[in-house]
Length: 572
Ligand code: DON
Image (tube, rainbow, N blue to C red):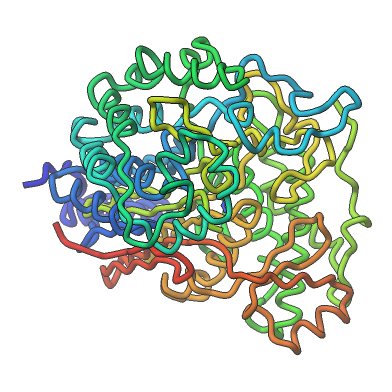
């Protein structure tokens, strides 16, 4: 039997409503009505059926959405090693139904204390290719282990040991190679072969294993067990920490015990905004996701998109993307290191100004917008969404950055390290692996968190709640934008996750789009408006969404058809 927390019931509500009058009462009734409801079923939508099952297993055992989030995160670390892991980090957006408390758990990696601004430059000041991408120098100090312990202890109902159990089991018993795994291992094959520890775990005789081959990870199981037993100290201190540091340093990395000791999770206020009656709650810096999403939606709120032909609709959305990504490159970085004008960037008046620079009959060249100050001071990564039957929610996007991260496993740990250091701007104006440019705000500094695009998001109206997000590097934010527009149009999660996608990120100055996203006619019209078009060979992203219709009281969930995830809705 689950241990439900007490909350307002319908009769208390009516009583309170009768005592109060006017708009305040209406507001109160609105908020409390939302509280009084609980969903008829729980949903877990993640990139791997084994991780989704782990989430439901923990919910069935009496855990809440936060316990389930720990189980899903840890299991994804095992069964989707290309995307995220305890050698990486992420952002967990939480909504606690009991008191409507919302918070973003920032478990983003930090630059090692020995890192510095020019870490990846040669004596001539040029970027050394690959250094921020492969091997231990590419790895930030992992945040996911600390975040999982924090979430379990502060928000969960079950002991960490119980929530980590499905992941430990999957690591010991093995998971079966699937198509997604093969694709991503194929993509990183050369680098994976180059690191013996990585090849031993993730390849078979140095080759990408066949579908169905079982990958067992006993070292990772031991590391997860150390966490289950000792909490945070199981990873950041003791035998695991010693092996991590030795492995990193022996191979030319710069981690120290002080780095592990100093790593802390930060609780941050999510970014908030409103679009046509929809409350937006999304990722705060050091992710650029929430600010860029709100800026774009603020710009778009000045248009009746559904009354505009597809080509002009696409043009307008692209122009909003262009402007938000320009600001991203210029202003955004780790808020503990740089002052971010969040209020200005998310203010409707600011968007009015940006909208005024747009023309309906012409693309704005990115070069015509103020430049990014240059010398001023798929399917890796993963997203999952959870709703429990108390109405608690989690939207989490987790990453080791590129597929299989830095392709480096410190011996004996089973921990595949991230290459999140590549999300910093190695040199102002020089694009990273996703073609993103940045400036001083995202320059490397000791202990700083690299700027992210991860955008775990809640959308709420008076009768609908959405939980969504996706991996996809720089395209994450525009995917969430397109998903949010589907939600705004009243569409179900299956439409948010499957919708064909297009993207613009200021630089390069081109619309990237999936093979089926823009008709020939729309492409021609966009060219006439002055847009550069860059068709993508493949579809991208792996979105997982949940919708709770609070009035009709039903729950729907969907996983992106581009990935191999699952999104069952179940009662517990
Ligand atoms: O934090 C970020 O924005 C990136 N490290 C995310 C990378 C990603 O989504 C890769 N997936 N295709």
